[in-house]
Amino acid sequence: MTHQSQPSTTLSPPAPMTSMQRVLTALGQREPDRVPLFLFPVMQGARELGCSIQDYFARPEQVAEGQWRLRAKFGHDCLYNFHYAAIEIEAWGGTTLFRTDGPPNAGSPIVQDPEDIRRLSVPRIEDSPSLQRVLAATRLMAEQACGEVPIIGVVMSPFSLPVMQLGFEHYLILMHERRDLFERLMQLNERFCVDWANAQVEAGANAICYFDPVSSVTIVSRELFLATGREVARRTIAQLKAPAAMHFASGRILPRVPDLFDTGAAVIGVSSHEDLGALKRAAQGRLSLLGNLNGIEMRHWTPEQAESAVKTAIQAAGRGGGFILADNHGEIPWQVPDAVLMAIAHAVKRWGCYPLADDNTD
Amino acid sequence: MSSSSDALLQALLALNRVQAQELLAQARAEYSPLEVIEILIRPALEELGQLWEGGDCALSQIYMSGRICEELLEELFGEALSDDLPETDGPPRLGIAVLEDYHLLGKQIVRTVLRAAGYRVHDYGRQDVDTLLEQVRADGIEVLLISTLMLPAALRVRTLIERLREVAPGVRVVVGGAPYRFDDQLWREVGADAVGLSAGDILPILERLGVKP
Ligand code: B12
Image 1 (cartoon, helix red, strand yellow):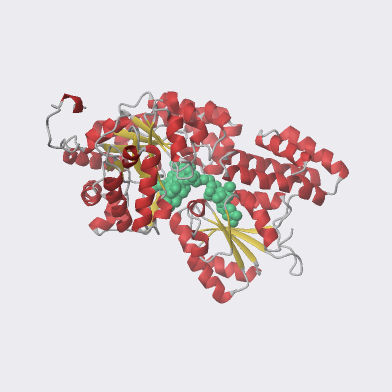
Image 2 (cartoon, helix red, strand yellow):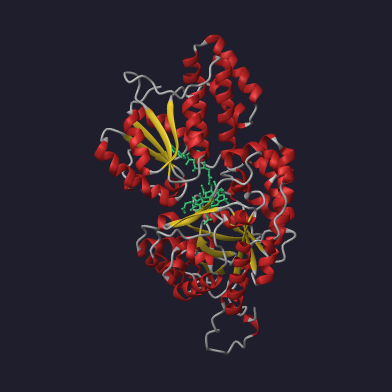
């Protein structure tokens, strides 16, 4: 940034940063004009446009328009191309089950018998109408954003995708008892993940959110993570053509933060179940933090509670940059009232301007 | 927690089946099957749940060790663990289901804990409100355990409980699953009698409700 080069006699305040400048400064472990806010309303675009969740995701123009309107409403610092996790499963030949009051889920596992993994082949991005819709939406967002608002693309990690490919129980057994088939599945999924992420980058995504909750402390032991999820992340993230955030979808990660330094991730998504200050210290300025407001609780927050949660998070992790305020899952539940999101957005403007309020008082 | 139960816990955390098997065999030489469950297995499973809630062990360990326990019990006691409900004059009848959600793992783990602790529980799998109500009534279930992973499903439990109160007011409902772990008011909001934050929690909850194996 160019703050130092401004003449010291100037009295007019510096022009506000664009969202892109704000985010890049924070990721560079420096303090921008204020704490960046990544609000992740995903399904809420359907409400804006007055259609059902299923219809909304069927048309890229709607998703791009929805993201744009939501940003105009809340003033947050990104556009988000995420549709729903199961959309990747559609590319693998699986189905998605929609409902009217929440996110869709993956239908029956595409791998019924682990031996089928030997015969599985990697879907091509260009052959999947579902993924093409996401790319079209991303291109539309990029046209509107003009480089001033970061567009966040999304992939499921090769290590977390199998929960939907096989079902959770079968996947846990595979991981522990069939390492040969597990490794083969990772090879396929890594290829797919890299292709899918880079297609999004080509369409205009500026960063990739790599969702990998199976690597969290909540789901696998450290020993298993080091032998599996971490290696997968290292190999995959190294091939991405944009910076990556590793997101644990509100799974815990604190004891494992140092294990993430060499995954290639620039950012980690952190849980409301953990102390944000402790996470910031553990990250040692080597990883930026994204989080950690509790989206499920937001459903019944008052504006005061929203403000207090924002203030607490900023106090714990805002200083020195390296922090983007967001929910802790990467998706705001359908049931959260807009008034709460508005209160969050206001609170960031009130408490998130640098230098932070408590920097002045101590 | 006794030292033998702690040894079992360590074996389970390490997923060391052989060692777990030896510990159970040693205990079996001294105690009856029910005592082995009471002294060794039950405290270990409860502790595993506590560790998970505190972020000190992983779901992979809970799931795999639950499987080990179930298998070993069948081996040791020479019979398949039964899912049949007890006679009507026996201990209260337990049912477990996933409500309008496609994620069965939480329910599966709770069921494993119950069986390894000597309970019989009727597994209804995935159900919607209407069919579950009907079956719970027909089977004379007295304590119903519900697992959900998605928030809309967790919220749907309210409808289930309201309807249940009308047709079978005596049934007690215990809920669990991720949404309840992120919102500590949610179980009361939906009208449940208790919530478990980990699978192991079900054992002290049943004890509080006066339900014995
Ligand atoms: C791993 C994970 C993923 C993985 C795998 C998910 C899966 N199982 O299919 C992936 C990356 C694929 C994923 C995707 C999604 N996820 Co996800 N994910 C998680 C995470 C980190 C763990 C979920 C899990 O399966 N845990 C294992 C189960 C067994 O744990 P559990 O339910 O807590 O059960 C334990 C206890 O609660 C207890 N218990 C459970 N039931 C019962 C019952 C009784 C009676 C008792 C006593 C105890 C008990 O025992 C169990 C063991 O101790 C959670 C967040 C978290 N920190 O938990 C989010 C979470 C479940 N995901 C969530 C969502 C929304 C999704 C998506 C719908 C996102 C999207 N829009 O696409 C998709 C759906 C995927 C699909 N299947 O189609 C939300 C759900 C709540 C909500 N907001 O609606 C969560 C809670 C995140 C959050 N904080 O909001 N996810």
